[in-house]
Length: 398
Ligand SMILES: Cc1cc2nc3c(=O)[nH]c(=O)nc-3n(C[C@H](O)[C@H](O)[C@H](O)COP(=O)(O)OP(=O)(O)OC[C@H]3O[C@@H](n4cnc5c(N)ncnc54)[C@H](O)[C@@H]3O)c2cc1C
Image (cartoon, rainbow, N blue to C red; front, side, top):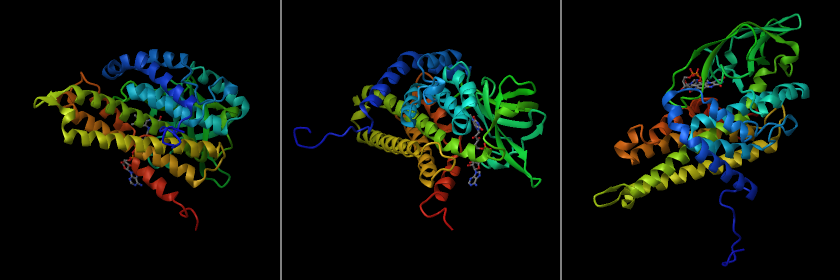
């Protein structure tokens, strides 16, 4: 209780341990990652040095099971790490997020043997992971994919093309979604663990991008890639469900990335307006500037509270095969709100820097470019709105 008899609440809603963890990741990110951010953006080269640093810190295996050598962290703790790393470098934040994204299907549907074999090197950061769902003709309509897997002696043969796969050409463990035959003569989506070095797997185009320029976005060509039987995840036909349960959790990572980008831009803008002088005073003295910052801070805080609550809601639901509407809705809401916030806040941050905001010497133009992808990947924000509507209370019945 404080002097006025009001019980103090921790504004962040975090435990003391989580706050300490956040502070330690922030320190690490500012000291070790931030100095590389502008150069990674400029060159667009995949930052292996940051991969090694993140692995050393245990951040690449943070949310993976302890039994596999991971950190066993809950979703909120994982989100805190992604948020803090993204605050200084969104490309580096994506490394943490996608390691989790690529591992989640194996955590959700993998046997103990599959988890031990594939997640242990991923948890140590020796192998990178990727999640390969999107195809040239199947983006928002992910179920329309045509990559196929046909049964052969001892396993399956995969054939097809995936596009826009983060870490596609650098990951050793890829979870690939492909259609397998059903008894009625149709096809249903199944999930496979594919070795990044499997014969017949070719890396095609590496995309040049607006933002997260150091993150690798690759086209993958599957030319009769043999996948052993014991690398099917779950049962044939369960792939779509596995993908959707994965996205329920991994979208929180994108929300955290977006929130971190927004916070980084806000911090830079606040520092700038306090020292930049025009009309004989700091521009922070002008009410028009103060109101912009007040709105930015409010949106960030609202996003943060929604994300942290969403992490708790999704965590509490566990790894069950079917998600409750609340889980899917909260995770989509957090991703939608935080990414729209990131776009608004970074755009305003550029405005607050004036002409300096538009040039490369200052970080906010990079942050504005980085923010855009958070409204697009792991389901565009139009798709998030569809998902939210479909999962409103009472909507699934009848
Ligand atoms: C940098 C980057 C990294 C990525 N990483 C991965 C990855 O690791 N793994 C992976 O599998 N995929 C990845 N993706 C793919 C990403 O998830 C898709 O790009 C995204 O889901 C959108 O699909 P699309 O690009 O085909 O757009 P489209 O589906 O063609 O959408 C075009 C527009 O139409 C809108 N739209 C579509 N359907 C509807 C509808 N029913 N109602 C209203 N609007 C609609 C969309 O919102 C969008 O604005 C990545 C993409 C990028 C750019």
